[in-house]
Image (cartoon, rainbow, N blue to C red; front, side, top):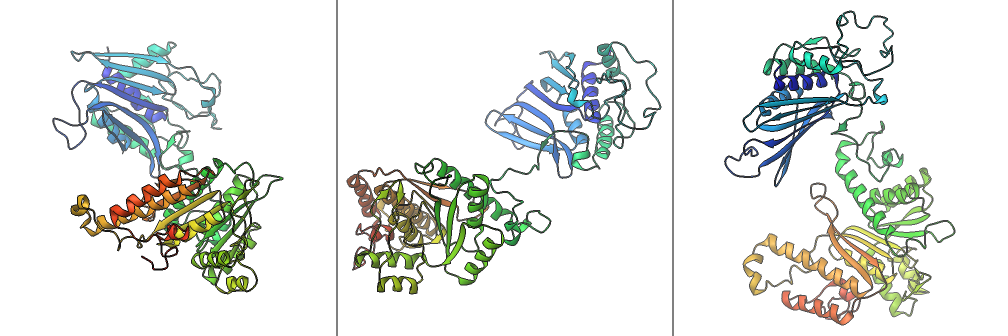
Length: 554
């Protein structure tokens, strides 16, 4: 009677040749098994899951090693995988093979005696157009003429003695010399040459030859695609991406822009999801409602500005009026041309500077101009950035025509040092429903920071001092947002491998300010602990910490 272990391996080889393998699961290790690099201790293997996966260079077998405290994945060619599986059988006391035609289980008793059982699965009609399976297996297709090949004699050497009993036929072939009938244009006729590495190499070579075709022609049908295209919120087929240099003329992503592309999509995903949970989301942007108004300070070339506007309007169907503020006139002109060319009617760019906008706001307030102090109908009431001579001064200083307009979302990505504070102040002044900032270059507090006694040994190192100053700066900003009725979050919005400027401050206006005295006590405690004298945002808000609120700057 054929050896159960060899019967199981034969079914596996046949499934690989016929491209019907779904998965192979090995479990119940007979002895402790550890990852490479560990000898007598470490994470112990619990089970191994193997399945075909489509990669750039063809279909391989993915080995997902599941240890008790970690997981590890390897992708092996078929011949390498068969050798590895052959060696593992027995060390793993249970092996479960699932193909599109059958399931087979190989078990080993504590004494090492192999046990084998197999069961046919119900035919799946969707597989009728798949390539033929092994010629010594019963045809699972009831169609008398299942072969789509117009050749009237696709199999010149049919099996003259087909076994009418499917189960017996499989078991008989499992022990003898198995042969596989290839699909049209795929495998050449392959006969098993024995067990062990020779058989593994033979099956692997035939399998590899079968994968000279394109991925959608390799005969495997639906597989887990290791290199599948991720679903991004921004449609890569949008034409403005070509003009921005993110996508080439062929429609493929420019390799040098891959990191920027991921950064753009992560930003759009975060902003869109945060807005959908904002209390104002149901009051603007829909038909019959005011448009959603957004200001993007420091828009640069507009990568993020274009992408966010397009996603909100194209994918979410919102009515949006978005203004990108940028100090460089050439970029403003370029982005306006692109917006017009692609029919993005609600998107425009203006020349301006966030610092000057803040100064104009202070001039307007001192001159008696209207400053936003309340919310009407759930939206920020429009303020006026000065009147008369002050208005002219605003225009001459680089402030934009949009500085006093109602705003729902204020964005400032990679605003350097205190420019982040200026952007947050603009959003607070206009009572924006949401503030989105990605700060960088935290220089303001570092010279002031005095290492407290418990931390002196740590902060004597420059890198630690810089990290502490960054954490303190953004922590104070979050506390100050809470005093103004915002729910503040500080988090990493994308992996550092894509950009070092990966921190985000997100403020959602709730209208419910925390107890001002309690928050101020927290701020003062931090200030005393680190010896901080000035902080830009607090000064702009009149808190007395920053130079803007303290004429002496102390």
